[in-house]
Image (cartoon, rainbow, N blue to C red; front, side, top):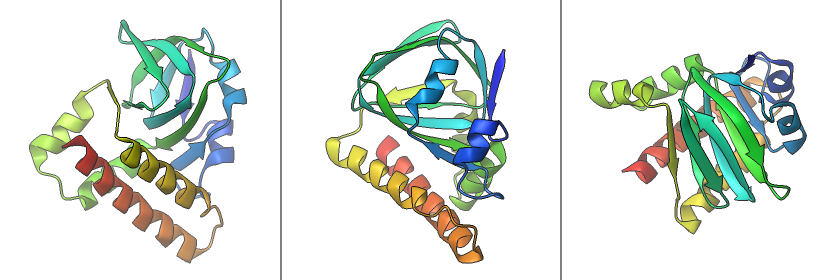
Length: 172
């Protein structure tokens, strides 16, 4: 079984900085390596579907996602039987568990909500067009911060915190 983590060679190429436990990608070429494979997600994945569709299984549940939807796959989930349409395009955020826990602590969530965040396997939803655009904007802002200066790292941290608040707002 393949393991998808922030330390894989692909994730290292897409990390925001050497110290960062955050990776971003839109690279569909990597998906070819995952087709019909079983892989373990060792982090939190948030994937925005820009076009096309995909089918896969998580915990024996068949999932179908399509353009305009978002899926969040929690840490430790096994994904298998993934197939994507020829027009599939996406934007993916990948956070290590440590970065995600740090972000949750800064967001000052109450304990029951924090515990609940780690108990789901995956969550799929369709944001409004405006909300989808906001998430794409955060992706682009974070993607532009790939330099490794201290100021860039502070900017990444601040954007991730703002993005966390945005996601909480959307999920209410």
